[in-house]
Each structure stands twice: as structure tokens, then as C-alpha cells.
Image (tube, rainbow, N blue to C red; front, side):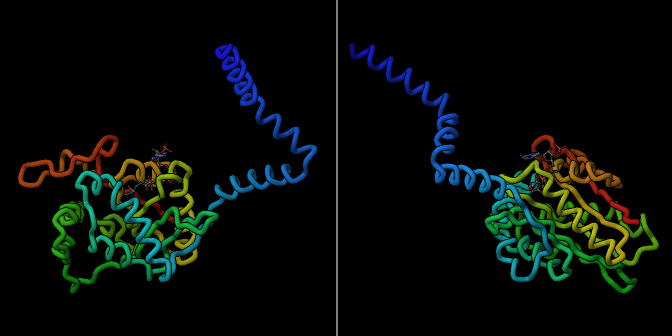
Length: 260
Ligand SMILES: CC(C)(COP(=O)(O)OP(=O)(O)OC[C@H]1O[C@@H](n2cnc3c(N)ncnc32)[C@H](O)[C@@H]1OP(=O)(O)O)[C@@H](O)C(=O)NCCC(=O)NCCS
């Protein structure tokens, strides 16, 4: 008897689960407050998806750094490989180009910053400008390893050699999207906003060094041109490979976008 009752209850519960959607729809037809609730739930989930884009202002800096500490500092492939941890020098590096007013944020409908592209204007150095190695500016041991890679790449590739006629270019410095929002082309939309800025302000070259396969995919999908590639297994310090991020992140690659 107990078993029979239990079977009956479980049969009824499963019937109710299957028909739950239908029952809500039927009830909502006869009971307007439920219909209103159903509509509110539907529009809330659409709103959740709506993202707005705008330039990053000085008063966004704290929120931007919070996002980067939760994302880029932890999961950019080299930071992840080295387990970078806290790094004030990287925070300063991130903040530095915000006054150039060509960095963009993606904001969700709750007002949270869910993606950023930090960009800076780089002017052609004069003959008097002495090149200061980036690695010499930090005492953070792990960050220094990444800055040494940047210094090495600077000895191998110069955008001003490739485009001798330009006086300045835009450098894509830091790109990060909240993991909950990845794979939705937010990085591409942030890039679109930067390209609009470049057109309005007559900048011809956008330069990006991608340490991640995913950011390289963003460039490839937007028809950027690859102009330099350094496989991580070919970058040796004292004969040893020092950066071995997980697959599919196999190389540091520079891409450019020419704006006509
Ligand atoms: C790189 C990054 C900004 C891309 O942002 P995004 O808005 O997800 O970009 P896209 O939607 O165009 O996806 C780019 C690639 O990410 C990968 N991807 C897709 N969905 C993903 C997900 N849910 N999670 C992780 N990666 C995903 C795919 O390879 C995709 O390329 P595909 O379109 O050819 O499949 C984001 O992955 C990120 O913040 N990474 C951590 C920080 C970092 O490494 N920054 C770049 C340093 S150079």
C-alpha cells in the first residue's frame, strides 16, 4: 500500500513537472497578476543580455581595476601560467593610458562593468628619447618575466619600421571580458568603438600584442593582419623556455588594423 502510494505520488509529481509550463500559461490566461509576473521575468532575462558601450572615464578606474583583478590578473594565459597574484605595477600599467580617452567599457543592465579594452596613444620616439626597458621599471618578480618578454619583442619588431610615415599609433594594451560574458563578441564590439574613435581622430594604425589565442581570434575575426609571431617554445632565457601557458595559447602574436 505504502509503495503504491509512493509510486502514485512520484507519477503525479513527474506529470506536474512535465506540465508545469502549460499550467503556468493556463493560469496566466485566467489570472492577470501571474501573466504580469511571467512578462516581467521574460523582460528581465532580455535586459540581462543588453550591454552598453562607452569610453572609460577617470571615475571608472576603481571598477575597471576590480574587474581586471578578477579576470585578467588571474586568467590571461601568462598571468595564469606564472600565478601572478597581486601586482601593483600591473595596476599602474592598466591605469596609465586611461587619460588618453580611447579606452572602452562594456556595462550590463545592472551597471556592472563586464568588459574593458584599455588602449593608449603611442607617439614616435625622437632621437633624444632613450628606450627604457619595461622590465627595469618593476621589482615584481613574475611581472618582470612578462615585461622581459615585451622588451625582447620590442627588439624584434617595431611598428614604426613597418609604417615609417606614421607619427603615432593606437596600442591595444589590456583586453578582458568577465567570464560569464565570454564568447558573445563583447571584445569585438569594444574594438568597433575604438575603430570609430580612430576614424574620428585620424589615427591610421591599431597595434595589438596578443598573448592569448582567444584575443588573437578576436583580431582574426575582424580581419586584422598578423605582422609578428613568437612561439612560446622559441622564446628562451639562458637556453630555457620560461613561459609555457596551456594550449591553445602557443604564441605571442602582433596584429595590426589599418584604418582607411
Ligand atoms: C580574450 C577575451 C577578452 C575575448 O573576449 P570575448 O568577448 O569572449 O571574445 P569573443 O566572443 O570574440 O571570443 C573569442 C574567442 O574566445 C573563445 N571563447 C568563446 N567562448 C568562450 C568562453 N565561454 N570562455 C572562454 N573563451 C571562449 C573562442 O575561442 C572565441 O573564438 P571563436 O569565436 O573563434 O570561437 C576573453 O577571453 C578574456 O577576457 N580572456 C582573459 C584575459 C585575456 O587573456 N586577455 C587577452 C590578453 S592579450
